[in-house]
Length: 284
Ligand code: ARG
Image 1 (cartoon, rainbow, N blue to C red):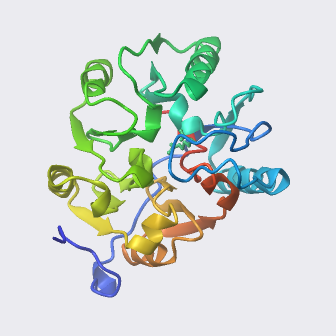
Image 2 (cartoon, rainbow, N blue to C red):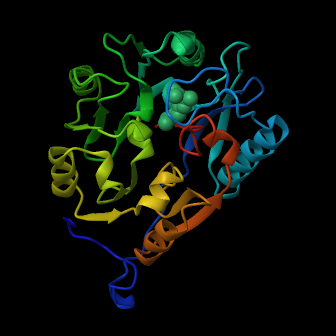
């Protein structure tokens, strides 16, 4: 099924909407000083496949530079030794309208990150809500303007939706993830703007696919090759879409829909099952 399938080449040039960057964004990132793959909690991770630490550092710096070149502000949180996945800031919390829902990680290996991120937010003066159920931050809780899409199935619990609804006072669309390679929602869905998203249908059950199709008037489908390169792990400011360079077909489709694509290469982070979006937490 192709819900309002928007496919490169099928949209006449005159119909391509003019996309606007709604406002400069503020992001939180964590430097990859201690990044390695030393345990495996998703199918991408293999502790025997070493990370090139220097390359990872350069790739992370190039992501940060891409954001500042787009006019966005990047804050950083100090990495902590012994927390190799702390570089994936998206999992550290969910921040909407200045309200923070702290993360509570599923796996023991990442537990301490929840408190490390919550402490950063408290030091900055944010009110931080303590999580009751397991939630891995913006990895699974994706802000879509008029609503929040909440993924569950591998990490974040389905029940988290109630905490999210109550704290942020926005409708929550709950979707189930069904393919272990796409264990966080942000590996299978990019919200491009309030009305537009790109997704990998096979990562969702039928009800989830239908819910996304009902919510987004424009929904771009990613092909297997792009999804399998973790190509959906990008982020949009409403006009510019920072996207893994490997997602070549998806980039074309996103461009055909009127967005600008900013390709970045975070190949070393894919060894941990991450990409540009995972390395970034938006402070709204
Ligand atoms: N190795 C990390 C994990 O499995 C990767 C997290 C990626 N983050 C994300 N937002 N998808 O938890």
